[in-house]
Image 1 (tube, rainbow, N blue to C red):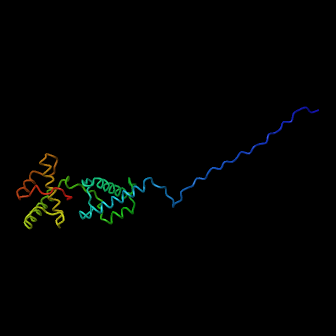
Image 2: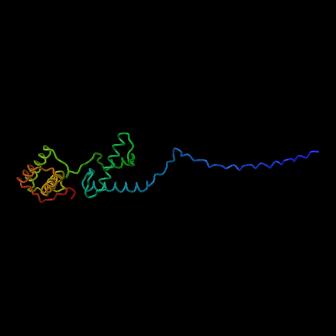
Image 3: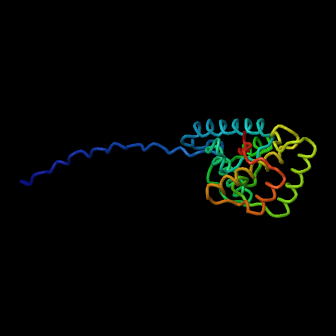
Length: 201
């Protein structure tokens, strides 16, 4: 007589297979969205319009990096020039400067070289002497040293204003690039130091 107990095997439960979602890979036509890209485009286009306004006012796009009337625009143009230089060197720019943006800036004659503020820049003797002679000739022709900015001699008008600006720095004992000899030369021909000093008005 068999007395051993027959062990009952418990049914093996099949483990539910959990399907892991497939990761979607980006195709060549899909690009990750840039954070703040819409805001960036809006700001960039607004600066471009300011460049156009500057050109309409002054006739060129050589915006100084230290543009006093719009400091933010000066900083922005400096950044565009820096990024452009990196692109030309085959390096990655710090910001977004696409071929389309470069083309838009080229269309308005944007100046890609750094433009120092003429009020803060030293001038060579040869350049200063040449402008001094032009100023004398203008005085002989029109009887005044007040060269209007909107005239065909806007570069000379700007130069005369820079001399006044530099002279004012000298009078207030601040750093200046105009020498005592240059002040004397202008004073001897009757140059009016009290005329307009700002190059952007």
